[in-house]
Every structure is written in C-alpha cells, then in structure tokens.
Image (cartoon, rainbow over all chains, first blue to last red; front, side):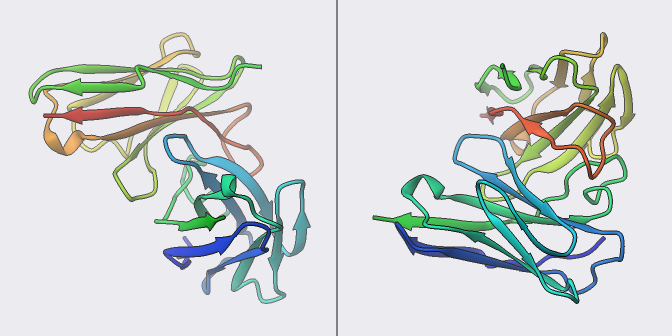
Amino acid sequence: LAKTTQPISMDSYEGQEVNITCSHNNIATNDYITWYQQFPSQGPRFIIQGYKTKVTNEVASLFIPADRKSSTLSLPRVSLSDTAVYYCLVGTNYGGSQGNLIFGKGTKLSVKP
Amino acid sequence: GAGVSQSPRYKVAKRGQDVALRCDPISGHVSLFWYQQALGQGPEFLTYFQNEAQLDKSGLPSDRFFAERPEGSVSTLKIQRTQQEDSAVYLCASSFGLAGIQETQYFGPGTRLLVL
C-alpha cells in the first residue's frame, strides 16, 4: 500500500486557487489516486479520481505528473464553504482488501474572507 | 434521492452500557462499510458487508463490537460494555456494486458516540 504524505493544514482566501499536493513515492503500477473531502460533522465525500495526466470535473482538477510519485488537487476560486479536510488516497482497490478506504490525517483547508 | 442516513446522530452512554447504531444505506446498494473516526484523525475501517454477508470484520477493535445486516439493507453496529476509548464518530458508507476502485462510496453523517 502506497504511503501518502500531504500537508496537515493550509490557509487561503476567498477567490484564490488552492493546490494541495500529495506525495506517494512508492505508488504501484495499478494504483489509482482518489481524493475525498470532509466537512465538519459530515461524512467524507468523493471529489475526484485519476490514474495519470489530468482529470477535471465540476468541483476540482487533479494533476498527476508522468512519474506519478505525487499528485495535486486544484480547487479553483475557493469560497468559505470549501473549508474542509481533504484526504488523498492511493491504492488499487482503494487500498483495502475489500475495497475499504484507507485514510490518512488529511489536509485541513481553512478559507478566510 | 435519499442518501445514507444514520441514527442516532448523537449518543451519550455510561461506561459499561450497550449501544446500537443504525445505518440506512442508499436503496439497492450492495456494499456497506462501517468506519470509526477519532477526533482529528481520518476514518478507520471497521467492517464490510456484501449484501447480508459480512465479508471482512478485521477492523473491529475487540469482540465487544458486533455488526449485522440481516436482510442486506439496514445495518446495525452494536458495542457491548462501552469503554471511554470507544468515544468516536461512527460512519457508515455504501456503494452500488461490489466494493472496488470503480465504486464511489457514499457516507452518512455519522453517529457521534460519547462514553462517560
């Protein structure tokens, strides 16, 4: 299981673009990179998933360099409501033997007015 | 449509009491997971059901923890003789198909358990 490293916390201001980088140096060939978001008092929510290059959806973009040893979650023009914890997960089957998600501590993003 | 619901949202128990936490997954979802989340930590896997079959309970911390999903829909996580270290948020998640990288897991809001 690829170990992931991401910043414990980040601060930003409304309207800025936020980039959260996750390091996963020992990512395996079949591993995918998945990001979840968790608001206070809520369960985590799937944001985006990718294997290589760039993936974009209505919420975020995920940039994965050719060596796949890191990935960057990009949130365009954040608002106060983007304040949350963001988790980077790497694995073939989400990491767990039964497809269960294996979370780290995540990155706590605080967006200020 | 309705998402995953959990009840109660908050539970205060005295040490030694038994508690039962309920999860109503999204209708028709085959896979159901329970996670435990301590304060300031990411969720940790407890157990997994595929329909009514409990295929993995390797994350349950002790034999005081028991989970069931008798009809393949609603699930109950039971904790016997609660201890203070059981205080945490218990999250339930479900997915449409067999669990795996292609399946998005949908989480409920969690039950916050406080053992005094």
